Length: 509
Image (tube, rainbow, N blue to C red; front, side):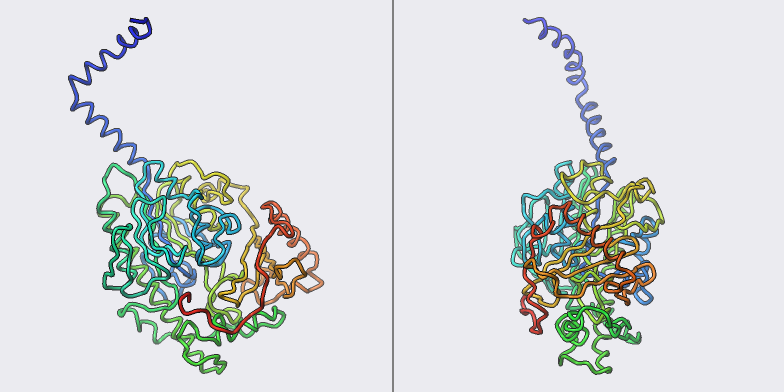
């Protein structure tokens, strides 16, 4: 026998004898070690709402919508006071959340494009690190595809937008079923059923995608008339359009304007009469009602985690995919770069995060992926554009961003918003509207002093007194775009065909 083999035999022999003599002890020790290692890994509960305004959440400023469970989560963790989406549109934003990439990098530029399967995303990274992963709810990247996506051990979704009542679901590719009931409660049932099957020695990551509060807004019966007594007016900014680009006024009577159909809450349109604000009021009331059910859902989930002893070792991230214009500047919907469109609600709590903290730093949708992986102790995704907010939450990242750029491409299916490229700093915003063919912009640019004009009422883009400020912002925007390889004609976008009045196809509203 070779000398090396003899030495190995002498070394391993006693261990082999011990393992033979004490198999039960060794097995128990190994199981304990595995369980202890799993316990060190935090669970992840990620909750995504669709079109949720921060102003519709209690702890984020709502005067009327009471959200005690979201508020309690905020009290246990961090409120991100300045959270933004980099493209205010559902599918592009969702793709950015999963991948940590801007839309021009992940390629999902509209609501009809699939998320490319080859792109790394944070749930798959957790799955590769020993996590059980699941997605239940609205996926909304690929309108006609409800098949399971890679990166998830369990996947329950539906085609398109889904319905507030009696949605048909594809359950992990194994069967289709239509459970009767309200979407928000049904999707919570699916989530809880999956959580109940988890083993104590395996960490998990569950993503729950709500339909609410996306249009068309239908509260469940118990909340249907809760806000009937609350008087709602058009925001004052809807009538202060002097100095704004013409396309904003042209949008007033369209699908995305306050005098338009208001997602079917106004049957005869356009209607510019002052008394037609009653339709707007009913729309807002219904929107608020759907949010209350979302809060109830979070309450059920946190109660389960508390009863099963998992709450303190679970990272919970609650957020919206993009903001929503609710009459500001005469608009409804999103897509634009105005503050209500890009601001998103975001609250997070759990291991690695401070308690009862309000963070003022600008955090973006592209930061979610690196942050969750960082909090879980998992290696970051390669070549992403986002950054982990873990350190800045503890005031340990002095080099955190003070500026970022926004991108949106004109959609033929929803021709109510131009191409947009813009920059937002801590105190200023500049946005312009490229025509898309390399020719000069045909829309007036916009620039706002956010510190002194947070409602964006006074457009300073053409004010000669602020020419230096505009030049600085334009140069910073150009530098940010160039860093991404988007200088000049390299930044591809469709040609702006102008604001149109026809309604979008009923299948894609």
